[in-house]
Image (cartoon, rainbow, N blue to C red; front, side, top):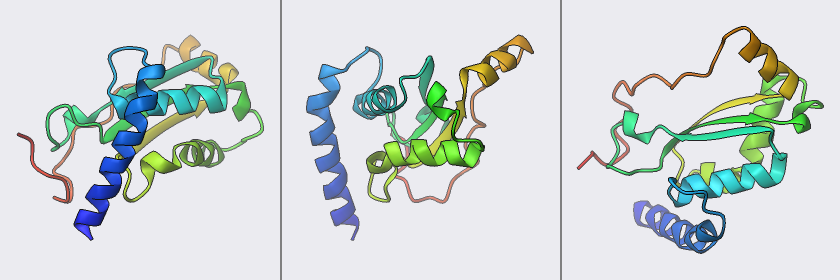
Length: 143
């Protein structure tokens, strides 16, 4: 089963590598670039951050397994609750967050522009996720 999962992940990386170069905004790896592209296309955000937080976890150097996305979009006006907005993002990134996909953890901040501006007006920001506390041991160790 592990070799099957690895094979699917290798297929995923090969398939996004060709498209990642077309949408490259610089600085991100292929998974980060794929996430950015899909979120831009689906939500036309007024503000978008895709943060690779993998370095805070027990994963190999330059891994792309743990992300935080901040998506601010008018398309969330009909999604009244945070869980509804999270579902929209998870559906958009279904390939990346699948059990055999490259993303192990995804933290989501999804707001309308009005809510985001109110947050900023109050001097609030979105900080990094907490550091890893050891995980479940399912990922390979850092090298």
